[in-house]
Image 1: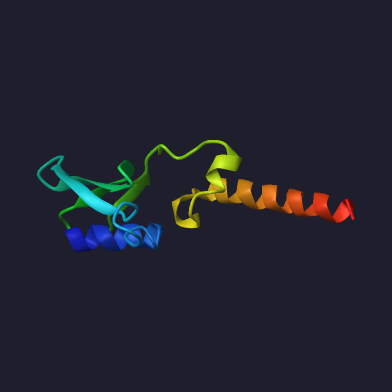
Image 2: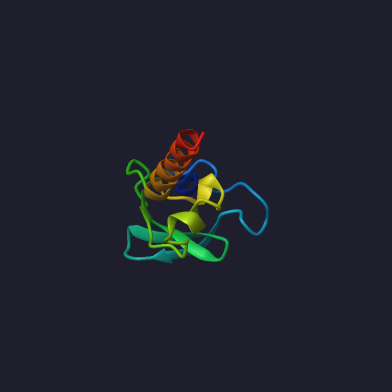
Length: 109
């Protein structure tokens, strides 16, 4: 079950289980929900990032759900974090911010 969960998280975020010890993602809790389903929690940096719903039936793929994280909500703060820790929305905001900054610099010349 651990391998199936790890593979599912890696498909969602390839670098989740890599990095330094304090920023490296890990599976922290396996909880039975029913006779045939489990919930697994994955955390990184002390924050729970994913809840994974797993069936004991190996033909059913685990479902990886991103939980509301403790990552900064402002673009300026978020853009200083490693890319692997940013949500797709935060990455989009950072790209826009950087493009606007570059545009402003070009027009000042």
